[in-house]
Image (cartoon, rainbow, N blue to C red):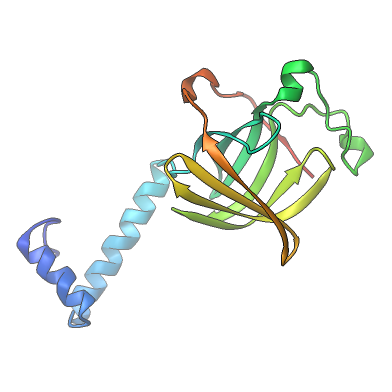
Length: 181
């Protein structure tokens, strides 16, 4: 029987586990409990600490970081360019067929796995040059997110994004988002 969380027996169990003294039944119980917790969090759609609206380091951009399946993604919701021209398009894209799509709602972060503090294996799209870069996202603090993009390691650049004030003002874009390619 698994000890109730927070009980003296549970603390003893965790201490025994940390010391490597847990028996096989206790270890299996812990693994099942951990797996169930992970599945429950995933099934409930629990937000990661990185989800929300972030002000990018340059260009006045606001990016909505959101889950996309089992990955972390991010789309453009606002920028200096969009405030000047709400119909701004992806005209620097290397694929001519994609140059007419809107920058607003464009997923620029794609396929990041991991968490709750570091996500890797994803890509970031730079609409200024129309290129994709391998990238990593790291939560530095509840209000700071470091986004690092690399052409090839060690040729990398990083920005620290700040949590956008008043998340509610940005709302959700709604509808399907465009995906950068």
